[in-house]
Length: 233
Image (cartoon, rainbow, N blue to C red):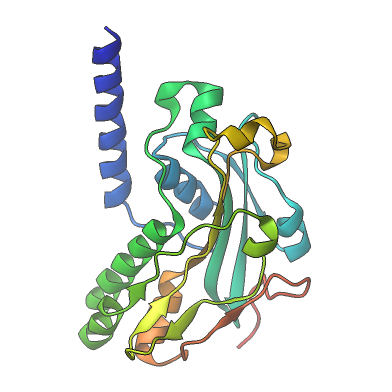
């Protein structure tokens, strides 16, 4: 019976992932964005209570919780355009530990979300009859960033995009990950356990890069006065 139950759980999680993969990502300026990120990254249907900050220090100091399931989000703008979404969510292993084995499935990482962003940008550009820009986005390379282990590293400045030595445009997706199933859970304070953080480029940002409206090399910062609300162009 246990094997049957496990098989059914795996099938259910696969169906959930297929449904999530078919759905476009929400508006990056909405609370729904990091809720979707939580679902995709932990292969879960759990809906965290998301807080969208309009203040970078509040985001920096926030810590997601599994019970109650609280997650956090902040958006970085260039003028009126959202160019980056930062999410703090919970890991799949942490959700399983609190809510049971069927609560979450495979753990995914930040570059997997950015790949979704890239695919969505290509689709939108084709729908907008901008095939040349769509081809350019298709050539963007999503860096397979290894997640950091400390919040200090996650909050450090970085280039959202850059031109590599090969002339290609690369997109960064830095993040933080703590594996709740790791032995380190025994020695960490609870507020650091099972955390998963991401910095994620937006569809609008990739489209603007492809159209030449923004040059590669955008510097992202989490200082107090970071632009986390839309500004007049």
